[in-house]
Amino acid sequence: MNHVTQVCLSSDASKEYFQNNTRTKFVNKLPRPYVNYEGNKFTIRPLAIGLTPDITKPRPAPCHLRIHLLELEGQVEGQHYKHLLASVPVPETATPASFAYHVFRDSPGLTLNVSTLNTLTVEITDEKDQLLELAPGPPTVVWLELESKDNTVEMDHYFTVTCSSSHPQLFPTNTPSKFLSPLPNEMSLEGYQVALQNIIFPPVLSEDEDLAKITVEDEEYEFRLTRFNTTRAFVKHVRQELGKSVYRHQIFLTVMANGPHKGKVCVGRVVDNEEDDDELNEAEELTITMNDAFAKAMGGTGDNFPNRLSLSWGDRFFFRKEPNIFSVRPETISMVHCNIIEPNVVGGCKAQMLQCVPVKLGRGHSQNRSYEPEQLIYHNVTNVPLTSIGFRFTDGLNRERHFTSKTDTPLQLTLLFRKKM
Image 1 (cartoon, rainbow, N blue to C red):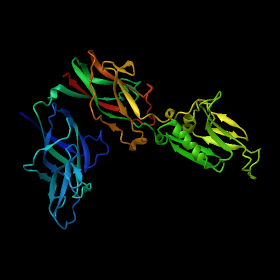
Image 2: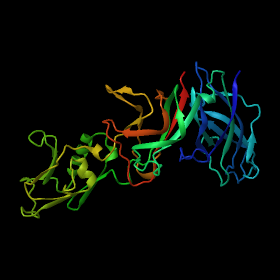
Image 3: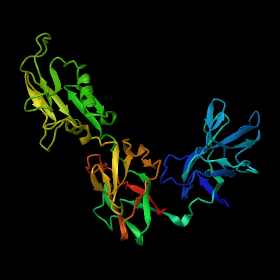
Image 4: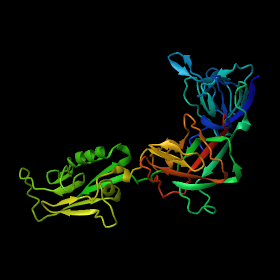
């Protein structure tokens, strides 16, 4: 016997997870995960759609709207793979008022290309597969029928818990990188496993937090630290840019290869006899200024670190530490630790690491900060009564993960619990 479930998808739903949803392209989280074992697949068929397309002008001929479901197995159409769920005929003189709801009759079931189903993604296009433009109106709604085999795990084997770094009244010391999240009631989870299902990061960087600047007299140079994967590449690029300066024959920036300052950056001023400049004399000083991001990335530390240098001929200045862009720009990987799972071996040590996840380094609120693992990784839950769940976020060196302090956006994640198989 197969299990049949009706699913309603809306362009207004799940916006807390998918902020970029529109009325023609949207992702919905399902109320529970569906898991098929032994290689069986889901089938899905469209039941109805409600929308207000921008078709106020008469069309020269009848056309069709195309509804795509990205989780469908690809179908060859011409030279491309398509994920076409259904096609809706639009009459030549249709208007938004006359075209708001369409029922699909006797639609065949189509196969979904997933074994674990957590979300569904809808795109609505014209006949050329260009996203449709919709007139103002209600949200787009799609009704589907989902069919799964007998060995689909039933709902009571699974449940989800959403956790957040907020709750200042209960846990005033919470931060986005280390926090406790309360449970609605005390829970005993003997015989359960848990996996990370979804995570929404707060902004990792404020708008200009990764912008490193250096000015030589009136020449300013800017560098986005998020564009460099290594410190070496950053230092090399800075040297190349300074090599274009009108003062290039007077200044240098180098990493010391030996001596007491080995590995540290040195910036200085020299006299180049081959490039005499009548406008400069040995009494003049050359002014170099750096913002905090540049100074810190080059190895400057401490509150008394000078951001302004006045260099006479022959002067040299050494940064206090070796350069490291990751002291300003965080790494793109974060380790998620959770205090309710049994420890596992990570790098030769035991740790309660839930998962390693990528972190997008876009700045401010414009970035898409939601992440869902492609594959769920389950861990055994410790056999103790729980009233809260604790999390800690670190980088690859087990240092606390940095998030910008210029936002009130909490970190939010969803855990999926299941009975042990």
